[in-house]
Length: 254
Image (cartoon, rainbow, N blue to C red):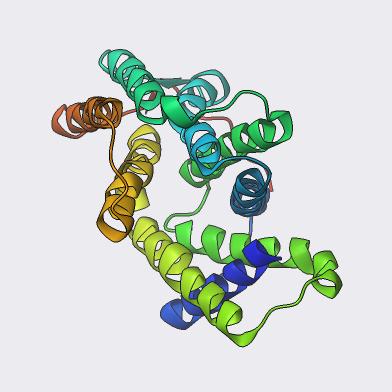
């Protein structure tokens, strides 16, 4: 319900920004929008059932899923330096989230991992879409689907005006604006880089918490975050063209 209202606010804001209702014309586009909806919903459920650290850590495995799925399903070739940078990121993630990760919450962990898989699917669907510049359509319809999927929970949920305002604000500034900027950048960035850039969100989380609440940051957080930043810098500085396709990807039939 919370996630559904947030997605509804995001969809309305994105429609106002784009000033049109985009169409999904291919099956891969519908699939990508459903992957997006599954990502935002499963992540919220994972945080509700477990810890935020677990959910963020497991969703942040998306770059590894992108690399594996892109290689085996789309016949995309990784660059030589993608392998050590992915390993560096994994070590950094373990150090960054290690103190807060719990392995005794199966449902929460399964949902967190599922959100990482669906996020990877969302990114890859955009990369193989037969039409150009469809990122915003994926995101708008994904938010609509997320809202529709939560409708059965509405009769069992009450919300006051302040909570509704907060959810609307989160929808606009946490989903709509970031993903709108993402839709502009996505066509110009490789699939692996796209997923790696999203790692900046969990990296900034302890900084905001420290700034707003004065929570101390442990040394392993600094080391782990530093390793991830170094890996991201390597990806951005070295020649572009990640996930180069050795042959044409499979044709997506309508």
